[in-house]
Image (cartoon, rainbow, N blue to C red; front, side, top):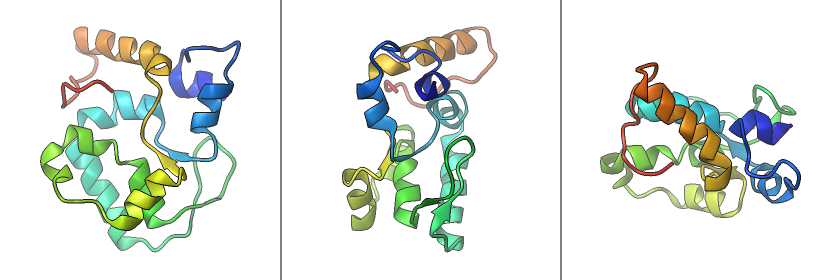
Length: 143
């Protein structure tokens, strides 16, 4: 059920273990929100993320639809939004800090989603763009 909520149409509902393992126990930005909202206005999202990371001293995050609270640091929060770098290459040129790289590699945060799981959501995004319901994604890169 979680994969259905995250992706609308995950690649394998009958054998979801691989996709579920990739998403579980990680701080993530919902693929739906990433694709349909944040990819359209990455500068504003990056500014918001940077303000939170700079101004708030937090040790836990309460996610919207999952068990809460979860222990998470500033680095974990930034790693979850690392996907913004693909939409803002000029800002990505500034090298990420060591703690951000470690959070990404240690698996506590994730911004990559399996392409097979993203097919339905990507198709929906393309349709919504074609009918003018949402703006085109800022970058031409694959999500």
